[in-house]
Image 1: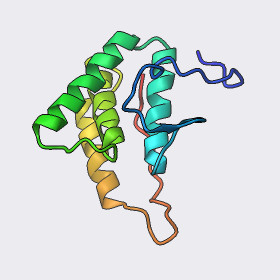
Image 2: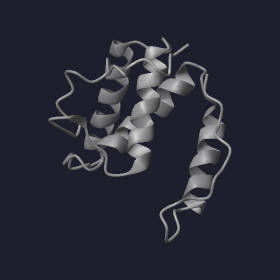
Image 3: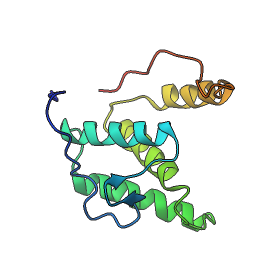
Length: 127
């Protein structure tokens, strides 16, 4: 179990030259990017996957996107991160693929309103 009072360590990213970052650490353009990042770090820290497993998953997603024509300019990095996270959680039986697909449809149908807050929904269970 993670100790919420413990400082956050980032064992997944020290050697990732593609990670959008500045001198203080990772940078995020949208809240969901930070949430996906934090979820991957938390699942890794909880022992659900190893760093080599994560590197293989994110690398495969980036290669797939490049093969599909992604210009790889940095704006889509967290889309790849999220896709890798979804695939690794399904492969590790931490999440159900059908639940994830339904959640994507739900999120697409509930885009943020004028105040930037999407409709609240119950989270899917991970783990």
